Image (tube, rainbow, N blue to C red):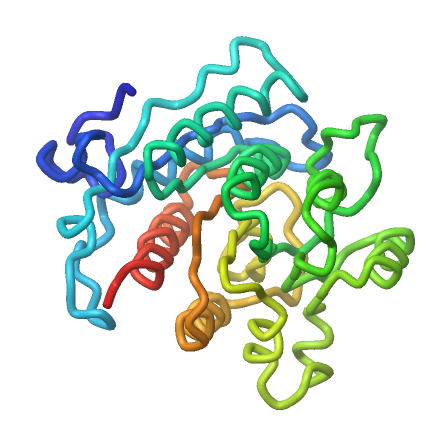
Amino acid sequence: MKTFDESTNFLAIEEKYSNFEDSKITIVSAPYEHTVSYGGGAAYGPEAIIEASSQVEFYDDEFDNELCFDLGIATLEPINFEDKVDGDALDLIYNQVKELLDLGKFVVTLGGEHTISTAPIKAHFEKYPYMSVLQFDAHSDLRHSYQDSLYSHASIMARVAEFVPTKHITQVGIRAQCIEESQFIKENHINTFYASGIRNAKYGENWVKSLVDTLQKEVYITFDVDAFDPSIMPTTGTPEPDGLIYSDALNIFKEIRKQGKQIIGFDIVELAPVEGIHHTNLTVARLIYKMLNFTFSK
């Protein structure tokens, strides 16, 4: 598979640590955007994340290591959708992620709109049939369809719920949904941790532990950056107030690690970069590297 060179790969690391054959971790770019319902620009997210990652330090003080040199991170050239949309577009992503998993790679997928996540989740589910899906999001994304599309970014978790047992789906940060989505959550026993419930201590003294307790041993994470509060993540298509902060996410990863559960893959979606605003791109790039450290560091 073709990879980016040193000047344009994730973290801008030299070929010795970023070639495909020797790297344990692979970065898949899926710059797909077709069902935007408010602000646009998510198709430029993967490129912006990779560009910003050149400013992320290799060293992590929390784990006292430089993970990228221990495992290697290969950044694949972006998927070319060639006017393919909906199921055809998802098939391109699914096929690439499945091939990488078959080769024993750990896969990070960068979107694009949240629609893309169905494909890597499906590929991982086929390999890890008892896994949980942990969704960071402002929206529950459980509408059966939206704007006449079953493939809308607002319906991605409805598609996931068609093959992943709903009791193995956990959502966090939710603060915008329609009443039908609320009813679906109740009827299908999805583990939803609303932002309001977190703020009001609805989930007990330690909501992070309560959340991680719902997860299976193996965890796939789909992370819509609008889970974050707009004060730290304004560059996303559908921002919602009263969101999570960066340390909320890290505390969840820490608890996953503490409980001996394993992150098996993840995607990051819905960054819509805006010219002149750099900190959001860097925040997402750093989040990815931090998630990798929580996954692999000893």
